[in-house]
Length: 208
Image 1: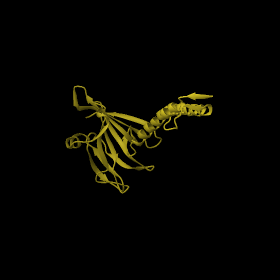
Image 2: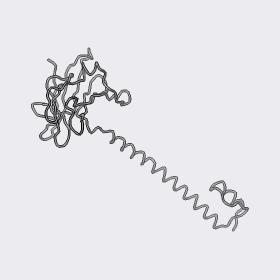
Image 3: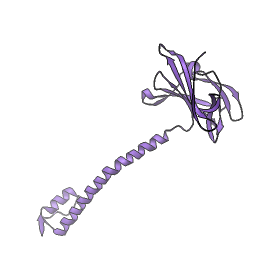
Image 4: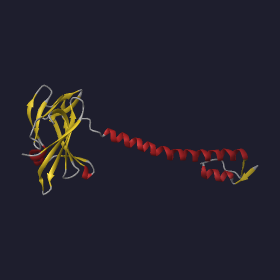
């Protein structure tokens, strides 16, 4: 059995092959098999590519997770947060400047942004009040009721505070502004886990 115009059709579909008027039945079967394999490979790639993209998204997300975050300040005003990360020097706590403070502007696409000088001095900065051996106590401008101790516990850098009379690892501070005046604080709420037992606790504190 021989089919006319087979060679011409092959040259368009599969590349350069000798063109002649007829081809054998075996050649027809070979060409058909190649076309079937091509369709199978295309279908397989359509299934694999979304999986690869999904894996890439998970990898990117986990790579962006902060490993040096001590705590953060959340605010009622908007979704932007102030982050406090431990600052090290040769694997030791930088006693002069033990924390790096910056914005994560979620309302601007999650970009990282430095605090302004005014924000650092009047709102979200801190002062070192005590230095120890590879640890320091600081006092936040936004929360002056108690000192926060930065130290290492269980191989991890943490910020220790007292919540409900218990020593706790601080995770976040929520600042609720007064509805009639966003520059005035109605209350702050501490969130963390107890150093012993790891129980999640919180405490709401009102200004004097």
